[in-house]
Length: 256
Image (cartoon, rainbow, N blue to C red):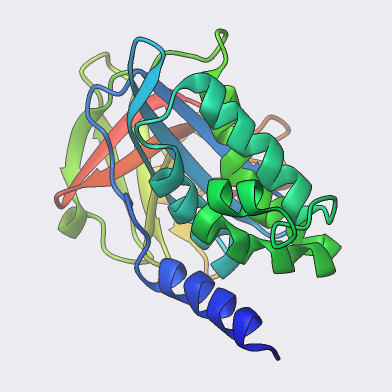
């Protein structure tokens, strides 16, 4: 491994261990979710705008080292830039990770990308391109004119109220009945009614593989996606967006 490759590898590892801007932006102008089903990477991106300029950007989520490092590097790179400059960075990074750009051969591109050049090694592993690109595609969506405005989240519990492996019923101010779960340290939320017979999911069991089982007729669902894993249920559970901020669990809009 060359000295340059070693340096870039260390940059990736450092941003994975200590990701920059890993937080929620309250009152963000844009909030976009990204998901890479091939690797299981998932993130939420928040963007604060002042006219045409990105004044703040942050992310949270779960994923592999490349996914987290790329998101961390991206938030550092685009903060303070105009939409046009951020879109230009997206194009150059996409060319970089797909092997269409040699960032070391062009002084102008080298200066533009800076530490982002560390992502160039991804091009040698095509299966990882989606990991490196996830946050960037989320950013492009967030900066589009059609991007959804960030919606309000509501505090419904504290982290200690939902121990790992447990389920808990809560009700939002709008009257939504929700089942919180803690799967391997990640807190999420689904609608608290089995789609088969509307019995409370919070009375059921959260299994070690992320399956929530209804206590009444044994219907099973994925806690992360709401997909049915075993009948008699046919329809999936509704899944809600969840944030954890300062030890508080916040529930937001329905994902479906």
